[in-house]
Amino acid sequence: MPPFVGMSEQGHQFFVDELARFADEVDDPALSDVARRVAAPLRVAVHGRRGVGRGTVARALAGAGVHITTWEADVDVYVVAEVVKPEDRDAIAAARQPAVGVLTKADLMGPTAAAHCALLSEVTGIAVEPMIGLLAAAAIECDDALWPPLQLLAAQPADLTSADAFLAAAHRLPRTTRQRLVETFDMFGISLAVAAARQGRSFGQVRAWLRRASCVDVVVDRINAAGAEVRYRRILDALDELETLAVCDQRISGFLSRDDTVIARMAAAVDVVEAAGLSVDPGDGRAAHLRRAVTWQRYSRGPVSAVHRSCGADIARGSLRLWSHAGGSP
Image (cartoon, rainbow, N blue to C red; front, side, top):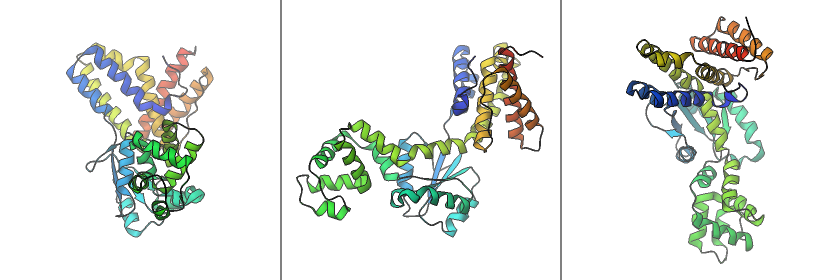
């Protein structure tokens, strides 16, 4: 049985993996169908006014592994520019799904982008993260053919003060190639890539650097946190179906009660409560397990939503199982 420490980062996936392994063992079509549904990716819709970079953000998120949809989303992403306009606030207020805000073209704001996002969060009521959409898309999509031109710019500097200056300057690099670099990386991305090339970085390292600078993975993490309750609800639905199937199959009954399943449910519940801003004691000692069980059992009996009652009960149950295995006894 795995320890509790570190599981909360991928609680839903832990349950998905456990169920998938069990479905493979049993080879039952009904069980496999339940496993497929609970493993389905979050469906994310990207919204925003014309001109704010909505399409670029959607492309970058898709390249980072996010399932982008225009229909029946689980999480909404709202792309905003420097100023949130009334139509932005109205759209966000009308959202029926969890929502995440993205301040695109964050490179134009420099070191003030994070503070500006905090202000936008206050105005919109949702978490807003900075992102450089074009840089993210470039880091994920650019091909190896662009590396030699960037190395040439590192060896033979060009005017990178603006796109117009870069395209108009006399340089060995053909203007058509420079135009492609601008369209792919923008000037900020070109400057970063050239600086990295001068440091002797490989193209793979440059792409990783650009990806980090774009903050796309921070946005993906925020989307996953926003979708934690959606995923947990899927687990609850799956458990209801499994309990029905277990009436005629003792193997499923055994799966529901075994240690790994109980701990996987706990880890998925931790995802939800931590996404809501609550903290869960990560201690892995016997005393920590018992303390956590008591805390979350009490929480589950308080004035919280039905989902959070289930989360509290799952965290308490898993903690008691870990406490027992650590040598605790009633």
